[in-house]
Length: 289
Image (tube, rainbow, N blue to C red):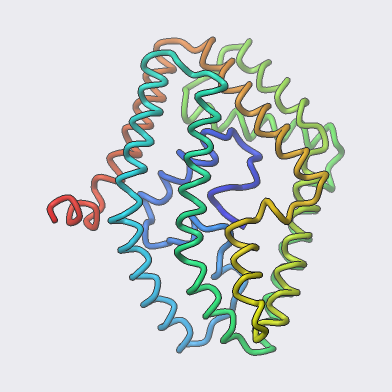
């Protein structure tokens, strides 16, 4: 699943957009960080498939850089204005989040035909290896996120969040730290629903790939990659809505308590993301064109 989404276990505004944008700027050749799954994590491609994939990837990168990145810069402008004018509200964050989701879906939709073609060319051994990789992924996440006691899961969740926030805002005040603890507690056993839904998606994906020569395969893969939410378990749908709401509430409260220094740090980070984008040769070429 996506390095862009991470199932929203971190702050919506950072995990869904800013964090991924900075990674894209630093390693833009890895287009798969902005689609809902990662081919290279699960598919063992042969030489011919890798060559084909790399060529197709270049085409997708060119499309993405010239047609999508300008919109990301506009998005960063809107985010920056929110911070500068102290208008970080729940409604504004919902709007920014929806914009980011639409950008993800647009890119996923563009790349899906290539994913379908690649998957249709997989032999049975490669598909078996993909399924093994899914199983390994599930075991790894269960070990990391479910094996600890619930109290430990909550504690680690808060620690991960505070570490990210320190990077974006600088050191948190005691009251801000307490707000992070409250956020971590409010998510409860969210890890259980997240990992169960991940396994649910992988199971459906494996079932689709097993029928990769059927006429329904392209539509099935598009649903799995572009319209993932339609396949969520009811429990995860409810958990996800709560997770988004809790993340927005956390960010609104932290910004309400933020110091001028913290806001300056955040604006500096946003500017760093903007610079990463503007420094991309493909974007410079597109602007000149």
